Length: 101
Image (tube, rainbow, N blue to C red; front, side):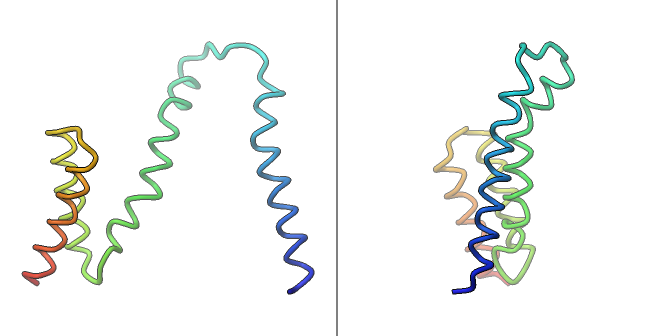
């Protein structure tokens, strides 16, 4: 195994550690700024969306199948608020659209 890989792993471990420790050490008071609070509130949702949406559109060779899955999952989540039903609707939409194409 290449010796440089261990250096890369140590650098990434240090960066990950700093990203978790710096906010705890630098921010000692409660955050009162409403803009910063709203950014921190929506940050996990934005991060999840940024990771999920490209994967949805690249789920198959045809992006139309991904668009159908996204539409079906969004509609099912909006109507039922059930994760299992939303995932099942997305899978069914991909199956139907890919079989029709």
